[in-house]
Image (cartoon, rainbow, N blue to C red; front, top):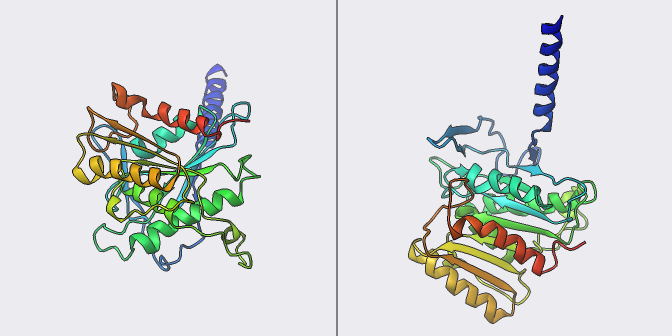
Amino acid sequence: MKIKFLFCVAALLAATLVSAQPKEVRLWPEAPGSEGKTSAEAVRTTDQGERVISNVHFPSLTPYFPAKDQATGAAVIIAPGGGHRELWADHEGHNLAKWLAERGIAAFVLKYRLAREANSTYKIDDHAFADMQRAIRLVRSRAKEWKLNPARIGTMGFSAGGELAALSGMRSDAGNQTAADVVERESSRPDFHALIYPGSSARYTVSKDAPPVFIACGYKDRKDIAEGMAELYLKFKQAGVPAELHIYAASGHGFGVRERTTGATAKWPQRLIEWMDDLGFLKP
């Protein structure tokens, strides 16, 4: 009897843990440009136990919500990197999302379509960026349901995902108010954006109405990022848009968020939420 009771308790705990895990929310029932593509995603695990995802045909968001008594109303959509060939979903996605949620910021890990993996029919601007824009609209459309402030929804990206986050701040629209799809009626403009060693910086332009930006990268990264981010900061400064830049002397590309990271680079997420607080995104 005692064994049966313990088994029931264990089963209940296991069920509770499964139900507590964040569930993906698809951006569309079927994403435009992915019609007829039904093959399963590929997931590999690195030697460090980190998941790397490819073959994405159903772009989605995985939400992490803060406790009600800690919620600030702010939300961040996080796009992992991977050269548009794969998604390094943990150290450039889920690790940070959990960390932010523990500090009162809702976080959504974006799984976007990959334009540069073998035999891909997708394009960065037509599909991956469309996934980012749809994600912004979707989160804003469900802000009331998810207890979010629709004026505190930002984007963040690492490497290739940083390119999408950058583009989100440079190309946006107010939404289509006559669209049958209520999600498409929402604005795709982020209220702030964070660029963590983003790729393709040479294509970035900055206008005076761009959202404020937080930038972080490594001194040892390749020239177009290590120097490109300094140049990008100046573009924001010249446009009169609030910007903050951190270049970490001991780091290169891909540091992300890992427990084993030490030194100043390990503290960049804290600098991020301090920046968000300074600009009023975390205040009641």
